[in-house]
Image (tube, rainbow, N blue to C red; front, top):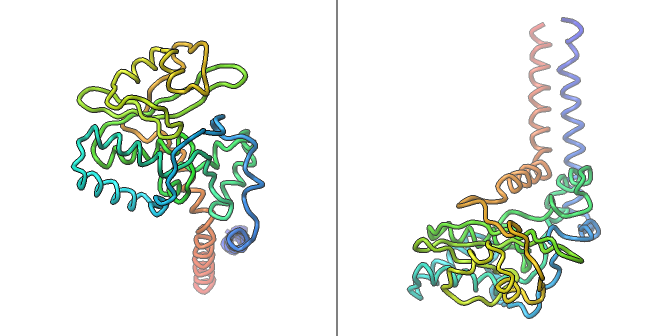
Length: 287
């Protein structure tokens, strides 16, 4: 047993070292003037870099969290006495005005540990892991990508009890593939296509859009997205998924865990250090 008598002391030293390291790094990245701009990859998850003539109303920037968005959304539905179908398109217009197109990357000061992990992955040259998947965090910004806006839209559908699903675009084309993310909402057995990000002009209450897109209707696609006009859409390039599910659940969970490590792991190490020290001293006294 003697060979293990120094083990508690060794463990306490490890926890103390970890505490010092994480406390220093957390403090450094919180207080440092360093920005994450230089760490933002050369290209985002989705390759659409600009949306022309998009709507944006800076007066809506006060809606900077999900509780505030929920309150505003429900108040407007009640005051305007909107039906379910009207509520869907109100949510569509609200998010078109709330965000302009642009990827929201988690800041280095908010989650430095995520950046460390990202550096050692094969995706270190893209934004797959550092692009925010948390609706609350997304709402702190005036800009968001298609998948980020879709996450917020789907939260609104959840609030008013309307079924939803994700619409995924993965269309091979030259010189660049068309990758995109949108949503659909269900009313009276009909699915209504919603794209708050690229803001296509589609007729309200037209439930034929989604099935036609899923059937690779090239004329419809080109009318919705004339700036990305295609000659062919292979069957299966547009699909639906994640019925009434958060499509980014595990990604968001991963980001939350790394956020806790970035900001609070030093506290856990400090607590563990004191516990090890206490039990080590107690054991020595008993001997």
